[in-house]
Image: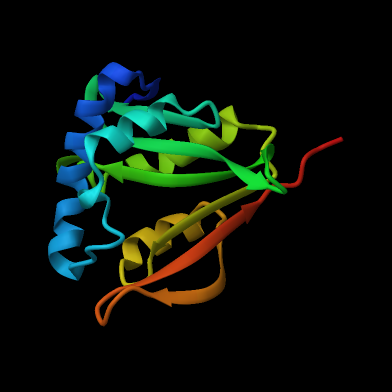
Length: 168
């Protein structure tokens, strides 16, 4: 039997929890890559509050078997100075270390795709050297696109997209 996963819409009061979980989740990557300019570890609490409150951004706490296991933010795409509903970015998505490698990320993405059934294009960015992350996104139908973006000698960012054909 599959264990229960919930996506709970974050409120301003959840900013401290999200900030702490994000720090704990991304700290091992920061210690590995020393990406001072791009690491979510460097994001301050005020930035998390702003992102929760943006009307073009949905932030969710990921709950696994009743425990806080991570979070995911989904934001609308800005096109011609206007936010569009049919293109979304996933940034960030993170799972606390003690919950990693249990299939939670995959199931979270499947829930998101089902919930946002009007979205035609999904976009995200990840670390090329983190093959587990790349494998997850490719398993979910994402395709690597565009140029690689070196951050430093240890780390390169890559973009992914997933297209969905709507019935109709």
